[in-house]
Length: 524
Image (cartoon, rainbow, N blue to C red; front, side):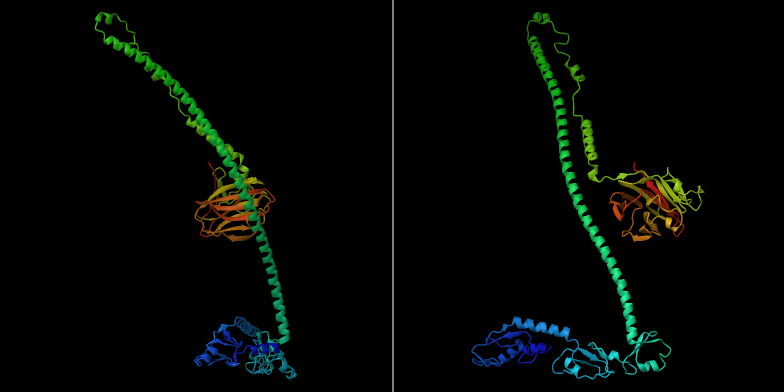
């Protein structure tokens, strides 16, 4: 502490006796505050008047002031240190701030090491860690030191407060006892927070692992897609080459046929030209006897070309054959690459009446279900749900599958998947209330997803009452989509499926008594 005080002495300007402010240096090596030395030089205008206030060195011209960056940094650090370390200073060190090491509640004073050594050691002089709020250590009513704690009023009191009757029947503890109890509560709270912190760290770690896995899967998917398009490009180019060849072959065949017809017609044309020349010669004869004795053919020397032209068939490209080759080629290419294209199978879901609760009506070739107040009086079996729920006949233990569902405008419902081992009776049998089922839920026109009795709010406003349930069994993903344009993801569950999954449905009326209805959409 003494060294700190000595350092402060070295950082005082000799003109203003305060810590340097924007310190500057003269050529003689002495330092001053910029404002201080400029004021001195303002009164020294004539040559030879400019002198250093410390060493009296003469400057024939007003010296240029150079900012002392090092000294400026030292002053700034000292000020920061004083603000942090000297928040409580000794009450008795009036000439120079010295940090306090203890505070006396009785004297309402703070003491440095030197004054602490000569301070009274009497018991009433209670010493605490350095503090500026010594006033809070005394009773505001009796001005005595606070020694007790009233648990009922939750306040610190002095001995007079305890004896004057105001707290007479209250439970009183010493400050030490109350402090230990408070510490115990804080320790308990700390333990709870520590547990929560550890849980948060575990969740963060799981999320980081999930993010890393998604990144790895994304890289693999991109690599797969790149390979797919490279292969598709090659196959399409091969198909294009083949189709070009087929078209060229058809063109050659048609061209050959047309060329042959042109050749034959050219021969007919030459024959006709010869006949025309002979007839023209006859027309030019002057002797009628010779003309009349010339015998003409029945068709006047013209063959039946017109009849041949009327009956001939001109060849052309077979567009349908080319189209069929294109369709067949594209279909073959896509069917060979289903493993890369992530093709999901659209499944034809039908409802299992043997599992349907008696408050469900089933119609439409086992595709439509609605809630009813009338009991269906179906035979009670171990497979039948107590409440208005039903499973699908189909189950899925591998692959990618999806099915679409359309809901009514009113009523409450749930759509999702469930193991066949799920309970059939009691509150835990409801879809989403147990570990065996997952669902998208509408209740009072609010949409959530639910599993193991835990809800998550769907972040989007639902605009279209058509939904898709998509199951990727091996990946352990169950996703719900809104079938708007474009299709929008609502939520994805991630789980390790251990049993075959059935499509599951739940129906109920809403708060206004309007019944719900669901229809399984069959692709055509």
